Image (cartoon, rainbow, N blue to C red; front, side, top):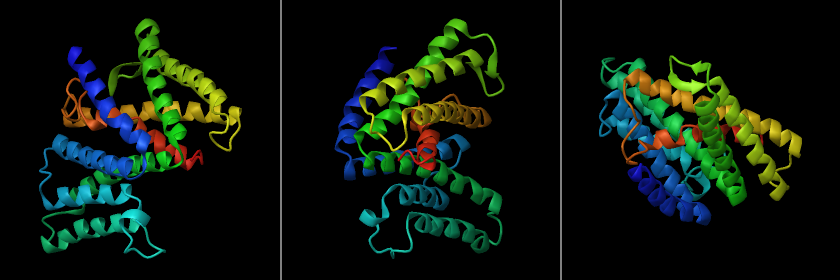
Length: 264
């Protein structure tokens, strides 16, 4: 427990100033987190990150995260991050030719998915911060409120298992408690910040339900990945907390959904 607290304090001491400053600082931090996320996926699968596919997968994630106009000025106005990312996909797929099909499309699929999973998630974290500090704080509060509410309600009232094959400790009651907690936090936040988005309070509360559900589903996806690879944590970079994907699994789903719905 003490180790968890120390790790949390140190992580917040590092991350909060970066979050506050924004700009280049959050872009570089998000790119680094995406790279670590790809590394953790390769580690879980038992693949070497210092391989052609590992390096390209990390590059692909970084290409997705860093804003093209600032970091890749050589790109034309009609191209962008995704086409740069797709260049890494073409190279990975092209290795099936160079290797005379000993490296197959099935094997190429994993590094591509790893890049997309980590890259798009952290890309949207950067986009959210570019819309203002309040926007990204709102997203974090929704995720944290969902986690805390689900844990507390599930521990006290949980009876019916939510998805025992994937995460045996999660309950339906806990999931509903997480949604209720997220709604309570959203109401307070949106009263304090009424101009957060162009949407009215009722719409944002309906969206909050979606974000809470999506965040919990992102958590389950990460649990499914770990169960598939038979590992307890995605990594050990955060002592007592696991890996980067363990801490950001919900957010990697919530930020893209917020963007998709036009919240930022």
